[in-house]
Length: 340
Image (cartoon, one colour):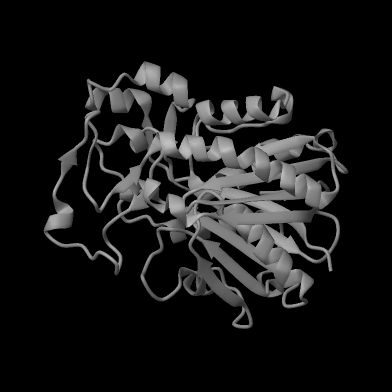
């Protein structure tokens, strides 16, 4: 059976941090230059007691209510996050109960970052194709802000928090999920990582010690570290090959794709990718300036914002890449997608 993306929604925290806020708190940060380069002027940040599951719940509630979906018809719940509510139990099981889904629902988390939305589309497609589910509720949520040291400008200027909800189903009518290609290379794991806080390196007195690097960014091993140059090099090398391989899997030429939806890392990287792939700007929608890099949520947010302008029969290639390293791309044949 084919699987179709039938409905989309997303949710943002209420609190907003602007570039002016960051400039006021950090006089040595040239926010005019930084903002111009990364293409971000504001980002939404979760409240101290607001979690990734809360944002996923808000998006899920919006989708179920706004698109008129009966919760009793959902038979699988996926939740992608790297900032879960608990080590255990899985947040997906808690979300099943919060959203009022049936106890027949298969529910599980998976830990994936910026490629996670495409991974989720692939998992949902496999469940539908195997006859294990007819309606999959795929939730995403991320609160990277809780991992970021306030004086680390390499990451604080980039990341925002968000949640999204997608309905993938066997019934035709939405955007058919075609070729999906996934990959990984753990050799790059150290370039985007939180070193301490897991079982490999538990938190202790040493992991709480702050250090300041040569460019003036402060963090501890308990905070997010990103080697921006390494990540950019990885993306510029990997994503063009990913696009070519996915198109080959689908039996399509690049000109057959009407829209390319890339993970919204930052404006500089995405413009470099567009140039490397020689794509016209009108084929590469973006939604970054007012929400920032929302990790797993970036692709569904762009699809939700740009999707109402897509027309039935158009082809969309969605590609995510980042932490892991991991990457994935999927071809969607657009149809009657509902937006909430």
